[in-house]
Length: 184
Image (tube, rainbow, N blue to C red; front, side, top):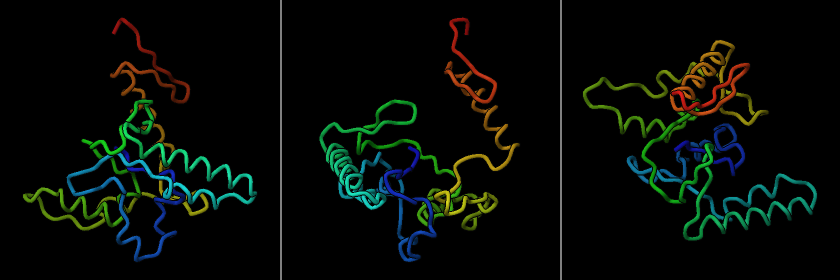
């Protein structure tokens, strides 16, 4: 699971939240330190998008979409679409968690990492190894979701191409592309 709440503006931007909320805020699919599930927002959680529009007809359309999708998310058999096109059932337990970049700085992630830290290793201070990443400014929504410089970008491209080659997937990255073949 890639903990995202793209239905909520500035979800990964702590400076947009009251300090008291930042301390208690967590990904909604985290039910316990060892229980993550695919979270699908209901209609109430999705309604905040209505306030992003100035025109009445746009607000009404946003309201209708939020209500329709939010209610659909609560129906039996509902699912969300993953980036690779597969479907994940709402409430389905996740077996793997990926915490991207500056999301590691949130208190809930630090507590989760401390919980899962091996007892035979020395204790690590909060935010260890994660302060070197640059966070985007608030004008871009905060957080960090890509490479920091040309070296990072090249490493990311190369890794993506190798992954696609090894898994038989198709991908285009820069001037390079992979295509699965029957030749292996």
